[in-house]
Image 1: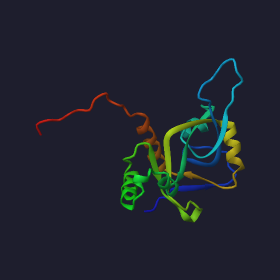
Image 2: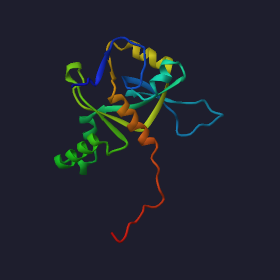
Image 3: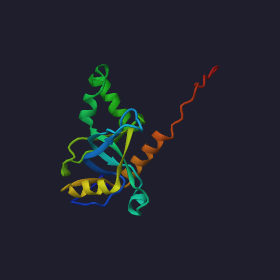
Image 4: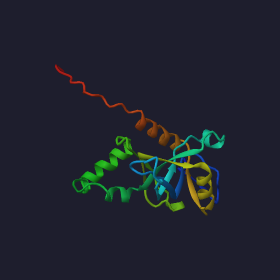
Length: 178
């Protein structure tokens, strides 16, 4: 039994978790904020995926929608350090991505039938907030966009939660005598 990964949306302002919003404008705050000075911010466009819960979006429970950046697997691989550029190293990284062993990232399947021509890598390391009204306007203006469908959306959400619930211990357990 096949389960589709994506739903195609046309000029839709309806938002749900797992919505892919390309060229989404986000605000990059300054490194420091001087309350006495005029605030300067940068606006950057990223390919984003909605990470806020669908129930909060549909029921109007939030004003700021959480989004993360995504990129093609090809771009992700090109951005790897030089020592990880060999075919063998890249094969290991792809396998770790596929198995969920790189908690900062999540791998989504490709679907060439709807112009998702490469696998997508979601990056959880930086999370951005965008006002829901702005995101609705941006998404409505898109002639075509895509939504990750269940159960893959829930798998994405679970990976996002695992990334944020990590606990760094001050010392590892050293097991001796076995």
